[in-house]
Length: 162
Image (cartoon, rainbow, N blue to C red; front, top):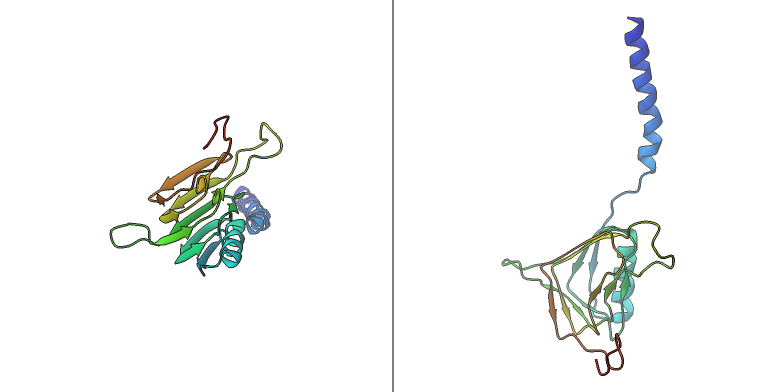
C-alpha cells in the first residue's frame, strides 16, 4: 500500500511540474485576413498575421503593389478560399517575391527554417516570382495559380536581359 501511495504521489508531482511547461508553449494561432485592394493596408495586414505563425486564411482580393512582400520566419499555413471545384478564389495582385523566407545571416544555419504551406491562392502579376523559400524546414505549395509573372530587367544569375 505504501508503494502505491508513493507511486501515486510521484505521478501527481510530475504532472504538477509539467503544467507550467505546457502552459508556456505557444498557442497555434488562426488568423483571417480580408483583402482591401490597397497595398498600404494589405501587405501590412498579411505580414502581421504571418508573423504570429499558425494558420492564416486569406479572403478576397489583395494588392501588393509593384514590390510588396511578406517575410516568413515562423511555421505557417497560408491558405486562400477556393470555389466548389477547388480552384483558387483568393487573389494576390503584384508583389516582388510576394511570399519569401530569407536566408539567415549565419551560414550554415544553426537550425532548420520554418515549415511553410501555401495553398489555394491565385498570384497575378508578381515581379520575378510570387514564392521564394530559400530557407525553410519544409514546404507544401499546392493548388495555387500563378499568372502574368513580370520578368526582371537587367543581369540576373549572370544572364543579361532577364
